[in-house]
Amino acid sequence: MPIIHVQMLAGRTLEQKSELADALTRETARIARCTAADVQIVFDEVAHASWAVGGRLVSANSAARAEQT
Image (cartoon, rainbow, N blue to C red; front, side, top):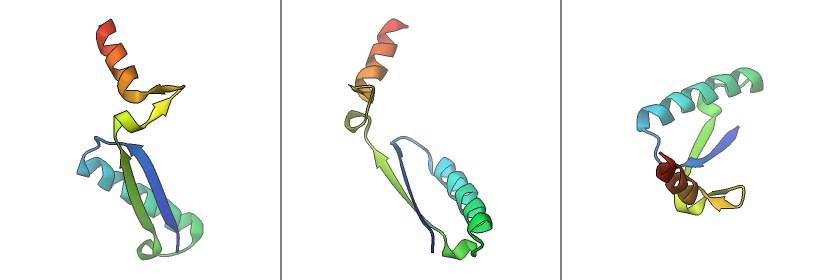
């Protein structure tokens, strides 16, 4: 039974997560040759203040971009 863990920044809508779950389930079931009911997906949403890219917190990068506009 495939289990997919998706880590992403918080803020996606239920509709977006539902669409992503549908696409990941469909393609995983096709490639792994299992039923869609066998595919499990876990969404782990991380706060912007708890995620860093390039050594800078995403929240700091967002604030810096806002100041530039």
